[in-house]
Length: 295
Ligand code: RIB
Image 1 (cartoon, rainbow, N blue to C red):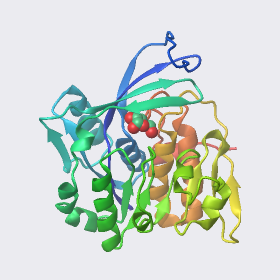
Image 2 (cartoon, helix red, strand yellow):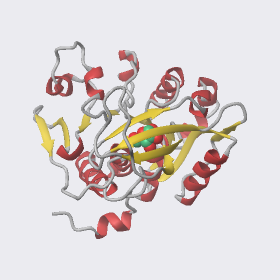
Image 3 (cartoon, helix red, strand yellow):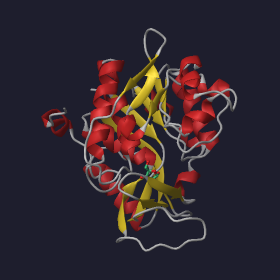
Image 4 (cartoon, rainbow, N blue to C red):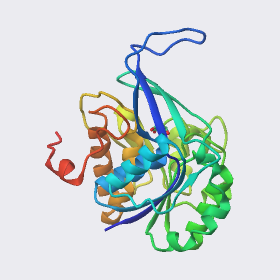
């Protein structure tokens, strides 16, 4: 069983659906407010755990109702929460999400995620040691993330980075990761210059990149050094929030079975994830994934 340590964010998602996104300065009427568990780190931890990985999460929540909700949800999903800090001086972070059935706009507020410091990671070296994969995103302070990548690299772990949201990381730090999983927006920040195309970025990267591309699937470099496009599985989408997170969690979960299998199962899991509301609503269990007949 793959042992995964997720170091990352936990957010309460405050979400409403609109027929279309508002223009600058415009007010729209939306649907009901839904409150659910989210945060890229939290979502990826739950996605991997539901698929059978042994997952531990290192992060921070506030000492408030949202913090309580986030911790209980992780426990319910068999994620080890012993390394989650409960902060008295900062509230749990929230994500303000406006979505259509096809896409979303997300703003994450300042909160307990930003209290995670390099010293917290340095104190957790033995935890990194006990895991096979270190899975990271970019909703915690940059210096903390850099410390985590350094430690994962020094301990010889697989370091998987979902560079979301876009924040600049030094090249020498990127080089210490094992896989990069950006979407079509985030990948552009990994280019050497503004003129580089997505294909050039993927082909020239020293680190394997798998670009998630929404309902178009994924792009990556094949063994013949050419771009491979794997289409997404066709489903009826209800809410695409968390689809990329499901891909990342599933990819890490199945990596021990080989790169191609991990990609295929991650595509299947992320397709199922969009068929229910909320970032985690549609994330499948291993049984659900295996029982579904993908065409
Ligand atoms: O990727 C989706 C997630 O982004 C949401 O759950 C939200 O909390 C933000 O972190």
